[in-house]
Image 1 (cartoon, rainbow, N blue to C red):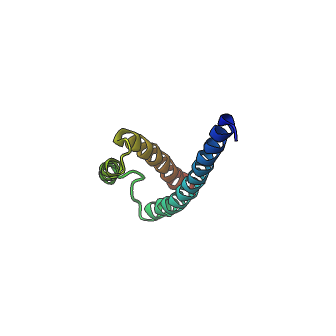
Image 2 (cartoon, rainbow, N blue to C red):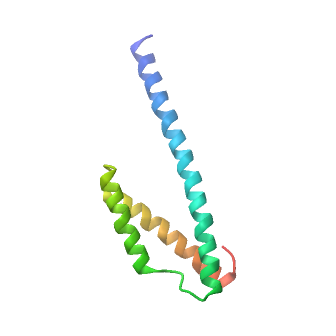
Length: 101
């Protein structure tokens, strides 16, 4: 095997692992959003606000701590969670206003 073939084989192996992880992330996010959708309908039914800043802050702090223990940049994990939270709040607002996402 040539050096170029060795490099290509190694990169292919890494990329297959990355692809598997990406697929797992997508399915985990789908599951998370299925649950947050149910939360949105629950909040609508009980006239609760779409956002819960106290809970959101606790979750951000929790995720930052988890990121540190996993040697992941806590700033990145916070940005990621804030993105997810914004999307969830938008879903909850649409459910509250229209009864659907």
